[in-house]
Image (cartoon, rainbow, N blue to C red):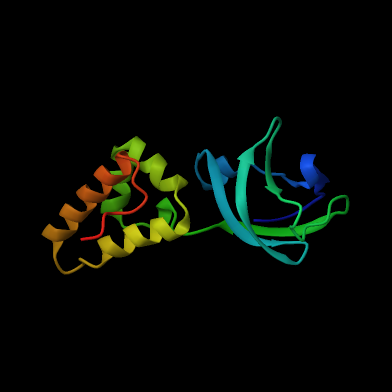
Length: 149
């Protein structure tokens, strides 16, 4: 999503970058949207979260995002999104809202690891179904990654 915004100074030296769109409507409802892209020509990663009257990204004092001047931004969700997933795994996440919400909140590293583990079974549908069920159970239990064998 490309847009122009004006970052503002926040408390403690932070910089708050207002987001002029609703990421829930664009990318699906989540507590926070992990994104990457550029703001003012600087590469950034962060999370878009709901603020009092909209959505914003907040950066610490060390960020290269200047407050007070209009900047161009180009942001997109990080990691695999629900629309990118295989039908069987996406359906399992949709059928189990707690697992789906936890999966959506995970950092891309953890989401990619789960997807890779499931996708490694393309030739064995029985193993694939077992792994999807195991991942759903782990996500429901709040596990970021599966236990090492």
